Image (tube, rainbow, N blue to C red; front, side, top):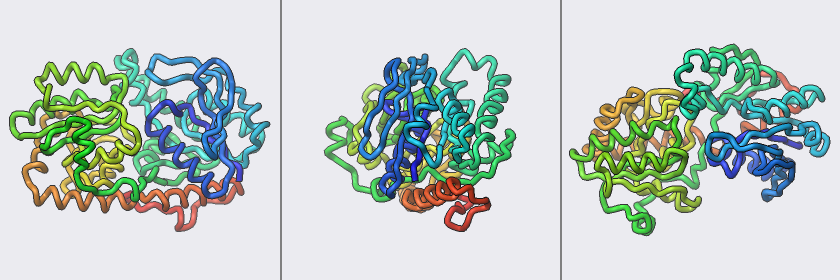
Length: 398
């Protein structure tokens, strides 16, 4: 089967969409399918790349205001379809490239699957000029998003929350929940990696960890305020893994809060070090209110870390309050600090939550996830009917 993915966000971008869809595309190639990706290029011209088993059609693009993001202009969708001749188009984002490929595929009668990977709040947080008009912009953006997904034959919501948001805003297409999944054989509980701690200058203290992009919607200012509240109450170090448009400002803010010497910003880590970085933490904390799943939270849970998370988006699906971690009200640094301290001060609770985090992550086993996606793609290419069989049914809690 020939599978074509349209991706308005792809490497060198590092975000949940780019990472999860590339991983899925490689898995489909490993299962014997021919796979290609259409994505923005890094210049104003069209060109092609080979990424191992993947063919990547890079389309001419312009740089956006957002760091690392590029917008494809005149993506020549028909030329891509003529060249690759896909059996199925898989779309992810309702931006120009995604729209162009979807409309061109529909005109040719090519079956389509849409994977829900975005929400309007992401743009509101990252484009500050939209914030004063958020109450008008968000409903308009949902109409655009749902208008896009309603043109697909089948829809995947990566969580029940993602699918509910689409339904609440007018989705009418056949739909199914399938997680992005997590690599349980890669992310698993492991002893403290002292070599990595030494290289990153992380002291021998309990660590509160965050990993992921440092962009506006991650609300890392809340995270830092919580860290400052905890600093005088417990001997703890803070580790922030990742990079993004907010990093320099956050580093300045941490210094102004008196956290210098108590916090390590690692920047981007290569894959091996990134995986091992979870061994440094006693608690994983995330303040973002705009997560449709959160790959990093799944990876932390698989690594056996208790989770302290904002009670918003899909995070409550991964954090069963009081079982594998705690939830806190969006924006409440005081609650985040109090709940993190509760775990750090109670070794028995910490150990229990570590085990439960891993149990919850195991519901998202990447091998089961890939099998579900492959079954759906085969069904979609054959234009089979929903509801799907048991292979595709996701547990309500997953």
